Length: 378
Image (tube, rainbow, N blue to C red; front, side, top):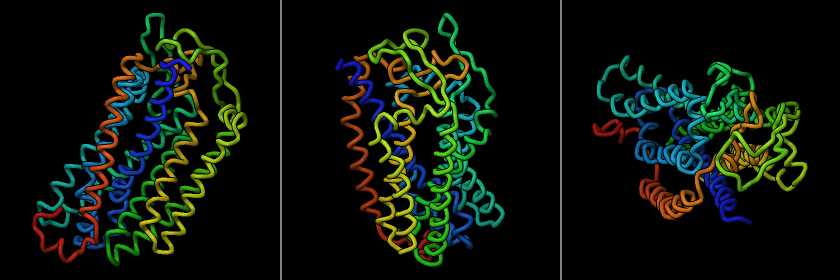
Protein backbone atom coordinates (compact mmCIF):
# COMPACT_ATOMS: atom_id res chain seq x y z
CA UNK A 1 0.00 0.00 0.00
CA UNK A 2 1.19 3.51 -0.83
CA UNK A 3 2.77 5.38 2.13
CA UNK A 4 0.52 8.39 1.52
CA UNK A 5 -2.59 6.19 1.81
CA UNK A 6 -1.25 4.62 5.02
CA UNK A 7 -0.66 8.05 6.53
CA UNK A 8 -4.21 9.13 5.63
CA UNK A 9 -5.62 6.05 7.35
CA UNK A 10 -3.40 6.50 10.41
CA UNK A 11 -4.53 10.10 10.81
CA UNK A 12 -8.18 9.15 10.35
CA UNK A 13 -7.68 6.66 13.19
CA UNK A 14 -5.90 9.24 15.35
CA UNK A 15 -8.75 11.67 14.76
CA UNK A 16 -11.18 9.04 16.05
CA UNK A 17 -9.00 8.57 19.14
CA UNK A 18 -8.99 12.32 19.80
CA UNK A 19 -12.77 12.56 19.37
CA UNK A 20 -13.21 9.67 21.81
CA UNK A 21 -10.88 11.38 24.30
CA UNK A 22 -12.84 14.60 23.88
CA UNK A 23 -16.15 12.86 24.51
CA UNK A 24 -14.85 11.00 27.55
CA UNK A 25 -12.75 13.63 29.34
CA UNK A 26 -14.42 16.88 28.31
CA UNK A 27 -17.82 15.21 28.41
CA UNK A 28 -17.22 14.12 32.00
CA UNK A 29 -16.56 17.71 33.09
CA UNK A 30 -19.51 19.01 31.09
CA UNK A 31 -21.70 16.36 32.70
CA UNK A 32 -20.80 17.59 36.17
CA UNK A 33 -21.67 21.13 35.10
CA UNK A 34 -25.02 19.98 33.71
CA UNK A 35 -25.79 18.10 36.94
CA UNK A 36 -24.57 20.83 39.29
CA UNK A 37 -27.98 22.26 40.20
CA UNK A 38 -29.48 18.79 40.61
CA UNK A 39 -26.88 16.97 42.70
CA UNK A 40 -26.13 20.00 44.87
CA UNK A 41 -29.02 21.36 46.90
CA UNK A 42 -26.92 23.72 49.04
CA UNK A 43 -24.12 26.09 48.17
CA UNK A 44 -21.62 23.86 49.97
CA UNK A 45 -22.69 20.80 48.00
CA UNK A 46 -22.42 22.65 44.70
CA UNK A 47 -18.98 23.94 45.61
CA UNK A 48 -17.99 20.36 46.43
CA UNK A 49 -19.07 19.20 42.97
CA UNK A 50 -17.11 22.01 41.33
CA UNK A 51 -13.98 21.22 43.31
CA UNK A 52 -14.16 17.57 42.26
CA UNK A 53 -13.46 18.59 38.66
CA UNK A 54 -11.76 21.89 39.49
CA UNK A 55 -8.17 20.56 39.33
CA UNK A 56 -8.78 18.76 36.04
CA UNK A 57 -11.30 20.56 33.82
CA UNK A 58 -8.83 22.94 32.15
CA UNK A 59 -6.36 20.11 31.50
CA UNK A 60 -9.14 18.05 29.94
CA UNK A 61 -9.79 20.86 27.46
CA UNK A 62 -6.53 19.76 25.82
CA UNK A 63 -8.56 17.05 24.07
CA UNK A 64 -10.79 19.72 22.55
CA UNK A 65 -7.77 21.65 21.30
CA UNK A 66 -6.11 18.49 20.01
CA UNK A 67 -9.21 17.52 18.05
CA UNK A 68 -9.41 20.90 16.32
CA UNK A 69 -5.65 20.98 15.81
CA UNK A 70 -5.61 17.52 14.26
CA UNK A 71 -8.31 18.48 11.76
CA UNK A 72 -6.47 21.71 10.96
CA UNK A 73 -3.09 20.06 10.39
CA UNK A 74 -4.04 16.67 8.94
CA UNK A 75 -7.23 17.50 7.04
CA UNK A 76 -7.10 21.22 6.21
CA UNK A 77 -9.82 21.09 3.54
CA UNK A 78 -12.18 19.50 6.04
CA UNK A 79 -11.23 22.09 8.66
CA UNK A 80 -11.83 25.06 6.38
CA UNK A 81 -15.13 23.78 5.01
CA UNK A 82 -16.66 22.39 8.20
CA UNK A 83 -15.78 25.40 10.35
CA UNK A 84 -17.34 27.63 7.66
CA UNK A 85 -20.48 25.54 7.23
CA UNK A 86 -21.06 25.35 10.97
CA UNK A 87 -19.79 28.88 11.69
CA UNK A 88 -22.78 30.09 13.73
CA UNK A 89 -22.93 26.80 15.61
CA UNK A 90 -19.20 27.06 16.36
CA UNK A 91 -19.73 30.58 17.73
CA UNK A 92 -22.43 29.26 20.07
CA UNK A 93 -20.09 26.46 21.13
CA UNK A 94 -17.15 28.78 21.79
CA UNK A 95 -19.32 31.34 23.60
CA UNK A 96 -20.64 28.69 25.98
CA UNK A 97 -17.11 27.36 26.57
CA UNK A 98 -15.76 30.86 27.21
CA UNK A 99 -18.38 31.28 29.94
CA UNK A 100 -17.20 28.11 31.67
CA UNK A 101 -13.79 29.29 33.01
CA UNK A 102 -15.35 32.63 33.91
CA UNK A 103 -17.96 30.81 35.99
CA UNK A 104 -15.29 28.76 37.76
CA UNK A 105 -13.32 31.86 38.74
CA UNK A 106 -16.16 34.22 39.65
CA UNK A 107 -18.89 32.07 41.19
CA UNK A 108 -17.55 32.03 44.74
CA UNK A 109 -16.07 35.54 44.72
CA UNK A 110 -19.30 37.10 45.99
CA UNK A 111 -21.20 35.56 48.91
CA UNK A 112 -24.65 36.36 47.55
CA UNK A 113 -27.36 33.84 46.73
CA UNK A 114 -28.50 35.45 43.46
CA UNK A 115 -24.91 35.86 42.24
CA UNK A 116 -24.01 32.22 42.81
CA UNK A 117 -27.34 30.92 41.50
CA UNK A 118 -26.79 32.86 38.27
CA UNK A 119 -23.39 31.27 37.75
CA UNK A 120 -24.90 27.86 38.47
CA UNK A 121 -27.18 28.37 35.48
CA UNK A 122 -24.11 29.31 33.45
CA UNK A 123 -22.55 25.98 34.42
CA UNK A 124 -25.67 24.16 33.23
CA UNK A 125 -25.64 26.03 29.90
CA UNK A 126 -21.89 25.62 29.38
CA UNK A 127 -22.16 21.91 30.19
CA UNK A 128 -25.25 21.07 28.15
CA UNK A 129 -24.72 23.14 25.00
CA UNK A 130 -21.18 22.01 24.00
CA UNK A 131 -22.07 18.33 24.31
CA UNK A 132 -25.34 18.87 22.48
CA UNK A 133 -23.49 20.57 19.60
CA UNK A 134 -20.88 17.80 19.65
CA UNK A 135 -23.49 15.10 19.21
CA UNK A 136 -25.56 17.12 16.74
CA UNK A 137 -22.46 17.49 14.54
CA UNK A 138 -22.33 13.70 14.13
CA UNK A 139 -26.02 13.72 13.26
CA UNK A 140 -25.50 16.40 10.65
CA UNK A 141 -22.64 14.69 8.84
CA UNK A 142 -24.55 11.40 8.77
CA UNK A 143 -27.38 13.20 6.97
CA UNK A 144 -25.02 15.11 4.71
CA UNK A 145 -24.42 18.84 4.62
CA UNK A 146 -25.53 21.38 2.01
CA UNK A 147 -22.42 22.87 0.44
CA UNK A 148 -20.53 22.87 -2.85
CA UNK A 149 -17.41 24.31 -4.52
CA UNK A 150 -17.26 26.37 -7.71
CA UNK A 151 -14.67 26.05 -10.47
CA UNK A 152 -12.12 28.14 -8.52
CA UNK A 153 -12.43 26.05 -5.36
CA UNK A 154 -14.50 28.64 -3.48
CA UNK A 155 -16.91 27.13 -0.98
CA UNK A 156 -20.66 27.91 -0.98
CA UNK A 157 -23.09 27.04 1.80
CA UNK A 158 -26.53 25.81 0.74
CA UNK A 159 -28.33 25.53 4.09
CA UNK A 160 -28.99 27.59 7.21
CA UNK A 161 -27.42 26.85 10.57
CA UNK A 162 -30.91 26.27 12.03
CA UNK A 163 -31.43 23.34 9.66
CA UNK A 164 -28.16 21.84 10.93
CA UNK A 165 -28.77 22.44 14.62
CA UNK A 166 -32.49 21.84 14.96
CA UNK A 167 -33.42 18.98 12.63
CA UNK A 168 -34.88 15.94 14.45
CA UNK A 169 -32.01 13.49 13.85
CA UNK A 170 -29.39 16.03 14.94
CA UNK A 171 -31.39 16.72 18.09
CA UNK A 172 -31.51 12.99 18.83
CA UNK A 173 -27.72 12.68 18.41
CA UNK A 174 -27.15 15.81 20.50
CA UNK A 175 -29.30 14.51 23.35
CA UNK A 176 -27.50 11.17 23.22
CA UNK A 177 -24.13 12.91 23.61
CA UNK A 178 -25.53 14.90 26.54
CA UNK A 179 -26.82 11.67 28.11
CA UNK A 180 -23.41 10.01 27.86
CA UNK A 181 -21.85 13.16 29.29
CA UNK A 182 -24.26 13.24 32.24
CA UNK A 183 -23.67 9.55 32.91
CA UNK A 184 -19.90 10.00 32.96
CA UNK A 185 -20.15 13.16 35.05
CA UNK A 186 -22.37 11.36 37.54
CA UNK A 187 -19.88 8.50 37.80
CA UNK A 188 -17.07 10.96 38.50
CA UNK A 189 -19.13 12.56 41.27
CA UNK A 190 -19.78 9.12 42.75
CA UNK A 191 -16.06 8.35 42.82
CA UNK A 192 -15.03 11.51 44.65
CA UNK A 193 -18.05 12.60 46.71
CA UNK A 194 -19.98 11.42 49.74
CA UNK A 195 -23.69 11.39 50.50
CA UNK A 196 -25.98 13.08 49.68
CA UNK A 197 -24.16 14.07 46.47
CA UNK A 198 -23.09 10.47 45.85
CA UNK A 199 -26.63 9.04 45.87
CA UNK A 200 -28.06 11.83 43.75
CA UNK A 201 -25.28 11.42 41.20
CA UNK A 202 -25.89 7.67 41.18
CA UNK A 203 -29.55 8.19 40.39
CA UNK A 204 -28.96 10.66 37.56
CA UNK A 205 -26.09 8.63 36.06
CA UNK A 206 -28.17 5.45 35.84
CA UNK A 207 -31.10 7.27 34.25
CA UNK A 208 -28.86 9.06 31.77
CA UNK A 209 -27.32 5.74 30.73
CA UNK A 210 -30.72 4.22 29.99
CA UNK A 211 -31.67 7.28 27.95
CA UNK A 212 -28.37 7.08 26.04
CA UNK A 213 -28.78 3.43 25.06
CA UNK A 214 -32.40 4.02 24.02
CA UNK A 215 -31.41 6.97 21.81
CA UNK A 216 -28.52 4.97 20.34
CA UNK A 217 -30.84 2.13 19.32
CA UNK A 218 -33.45 4.52 17.92
CA UNK A 219 -30.71 6.27 15.96
CA UNK A 220 -29.56 2.95 14.52
CA UNK A 221 -33.07 2.14 13.27
CA UNK A 222 -33.36 5.69 11.89
CA UNK A 223 -30.13 5.34 9.91
CA UNK A 224 -31.50 2.26 8.12
CA UNK A 225 -34.06 4.44 6.34
CA UNK A 226 -31.78 7.42 5.82
CA UNK A 227 -30.03 8.38 2.59
CA UNK A 228 -26.38 7.45 2.90
CA UNK A 229 -23.46 8.01 0.53
CA UNK A 230 -21.50 5.51 -1.55
CA UNK A 231 -18.08 6.17 -3.09
CA UNK A 232 -18.54 4.64 -6.53
CA UNK A 233 -15.23 5.87 -7.95
CA UNK A 234 -12.19 7.30 -6.17
CA UNK A 235 -8.49 6.78 -5.69
CA UNK A 236 -7.21 6.60 -2.09
CA UNK A 237 -3.95 8.27 -3.21
CA UNK A 238 -5.73 11.20 -4.88
CA UNK A 239 -4.60 14.76 -4.11
CA UNK A 240 -6.57 17.00 -1.75
CA UNK A 241 -8.97 18.27 -4.40
CA UNK A 242 -12.68 17.67 -3.70
CA UNK A 243 -13.73 18.81 -7.18
CA UNK A 244 -12.13 16.04 -9.24
CA UNK A 245 -11.37 12.34 -9.12
CA UNK A 246 -14.38 10.77 -7.45
CA UNK A 247 -18.01 9.85 -8.05
CA UNK A 248 -20.45 9.56 -5.16
CA UNK A 249 -24.08 8.37 -5.16
CA UNK A 250 -26.81 8.68 -2.53
CA UNK A 251 -28.73 5.53 -1.56
CA UNK A 252 -31.23 4.70 1.18
CA UNK A 253 -29.56 2.64 3.89
CA UNK A 254 -26.09 3.08 2.40
CA UNK A 255 -24.55 3.76 5.80
CA UNK A 256 -24.99 0.04 6.56
CA UNK A 257 -23.07 -1.10 3.47
CA UNK A 258 -19.75 -1.36 5.31
CA UNK A 259 -21.38 -3.56 7.93
CA UNK A 260 -22.80 -5.84 5.25
CA UNK A 261 -19.38 -6.11 3.60
CA UNK A 262 -17.52 -6.61 6.88
CA UNK A 263 -19.81 -8.18 9.53
CA UNK A 264 -17.06 -7.91 12.17
CA UNK A 265 -17.86 -4.18 12.33
CA UNK A 266 -21.10 -5.01 14.16
CA UNK A 267 -18.90 -5.47 17.22
CA UNK A 268 -18.64 -1.67 17.46
CA UNK A 269 -22.36 -0.89 18.05
CA UNK A 270 -22.55 -4.00 20.22
CA UNK A 271 -19.64 -2.66 22.28
CA UNK A 272 -21.45 0.66 22.69
CA UNK A 273 -24.70 -0.91 23.89
CA UNK A 274 -23.01 -3.46 26.18
CA UNK A 275 -20.71 -0.87 27.79
CA UNK A 276 -23.53 1.61 28.43
CA UNK A 277 -25.71 -1.08 30.02
CA UNK A 278 -22.72 -2.40 31.99
CA UNK A 279 -21.99 1.11 33.24
CA UNK A 280 -25.60 1.50 34.38
CA UNK A 281 -25.44 -1.86 36.18
CA UNK A 282 -22.13 -0.96 37.86
CA UNK A 283 -23.49 2.42 38.93
CA UNK A 284 -26.50 0.74 40.54
CA UNK A 285 -24.13 -1.76 42.17
CA UNK A 286 -22.09 1.17 43.55
CA UNK A 287 -18.95 0.30 41.56
CA UNK A 288 -18.19 3.71 40.03
CA UNK A 289 -14.47 3.15 39.35
CA UNK A 290 -15.14 0.17 37.11
CA UNK A 291 -18.14 2.01 35.64
CA UNK A 292 -15.85 4.87 34.58
CA UNK A 293 -13.89 2.50 32.33
CA UNK A 294 -17.13 1.20 30.85
CA UNK A 295 -17.76 4.81 29.87
CA UNK A 296 -14.60 4.69 27.78
CA UNK A 297 -15.94 1.61 26.02
CA UNK A 298 -19.27 3.38 25.45
CA UNK A 299 -17.57 6.28 23.65
CA UNK A 300 -15.36 3.92 21.64
CA UNK A 301 -18.41 1.95 20.57
CA UNK A 302 -20.63 4.90 19.66
CA UNK A 303 -18.06 7.01 17.82
CA UNK A 304 -16.56 3.88 16.25
CA UNK A 305 -20.02 2.96 14.97
CA UNK A 306 -20.33 6.28 13.14
CA UNK A 307 -16.77 6.07 11.78
CA UNK A 308 -17.29 2.52 10.48
CA UNK A 309 -20.59 3.49 8.85
CA UNK A 310 -19.20 6.55 7.08
CA UNK A 311 -15.77 5.30 6.00
CA UNK A 312 -14.18 6.83 3.97
CA UNK A 313 -16.44 9.91 4.20
CA UNK A 314 -15.82 12.87 6.51
CA UNK A 315 -18.50 15.35 5.43
CA UNK A 316 -20.76 14.32 2.54
CA UNK A 317 -22.35 17.01 0.38
CA UNK A 318 -26.07 16.76 -0.35
CA UNK A 319 -25.84 19.54 -2.95
CA UNK A 320 -23.10 17.91 -5.03
CA UNK A 321 -22.27 14.43 -3.70
CA UNK A 322 -19.24 14.16 -6.00
CA UNK A 323 -17.66 17.01 -4.02
CA UNK A 324 -18.07 15.24 -0.67
CA UNK A 325 -15.06 15.40 1.62
CA UNK A 326 -13.42 12.06 2.31
CA UNK A 327 -10.27 10.76 3.94
CA UNK A 328 -8.75 10.56 0.46
CA UNK A 329 -9.44 14.06 -0.90
CA UNK A 330 -9.22 16.35 2.16
CA UNK A 331 -5.89 15.39 3.72
CA UNK A 332 -2.67 17.36 4.01
CA UNK A 333 0.45 16.49 2.02
CA UNK A 334 2.48 13.35 2.71
CA UNK A 335 5.22 15.49 4.22
CA UNK A 336 2.77 17.29 6.48
CA UNK A 337 1.14 14.08 7.68
CA UNK A 338 4.56 12.56 8.39
CA UNK A 339 5.73 15.54 10.46
CA UNK A 340 2.45 15.67 12.40
CA UNK A 341 2.62 11.94 13.08
CA UNK A 342 6.06 12.36 14.65
CA UNK A 343 4.68 15.15 16.86
CA UNK A 344 1.63 13.11 17.82
CA UNK A 345 3.71 10.06 18.76
CA UNK A 346 5.59 12.23 21.25
CA UNK A 347 2.89 14.41 22.75
CA UNK A 348 -0.19 12.17 22.89
CA UNK A 349 1.56 9.67 25.23
CA UNK A 350 2.82 12.62 27.31
CA UNK A 351 -0.74 13.93 27.63
CA UNK A 352 -1.97 10.51 28.71
CA UNK A 353 0.83 10.23 31.27
CA UNK A 354 0.40 13.63 32.89
CA UNK A 355 -3.40 13.28 32.90
CA UNK A 356 -3.15 9.91 34.65
CA UNK A 357 -0.61 11.31 37.12
CA UNK A 358 -2.84 14.28 37.96
CA UNK A 359 -5.83 12.08 38.66
CA UNK A 360 -3.68 9.75 40.77
CA UNK A 361 -2.22 12.54 42.88
CA UNK A 362 -5.60 14.21 43.42
CA UNK A 363 -7.53 11.03 44.13
CA UNK A 364 -9.79 10.51 47.12
CA UNK A 365 -13.02 12.00 48.41
CA UNK A 366 -13.78 15.72 48.47
CA UNK A 367 -15.51 16.66 51.73
CA UNK A 368 -18.08 19.46 51.86
CA UNK A 369 -16.96 20.59 55.31
CA UNK A 370 -13.40 21.11 54.08
CA UNK A 371 -14.57 23.04 51.03
CA UNK A 372 -16.69 25.43 53.10
CA UNK A 373 -13.71 26.25 55.33
CA UNK A 374 -11.30 26.74 52.43
CA UNK A 375 -11.60 30.29 51.12
CA UNK A 376 -9.31 29.47 48.17
CA UNK A 377 -11.50 26.69 46.75
CA UNK A 378 -14.00 27.20 43.96
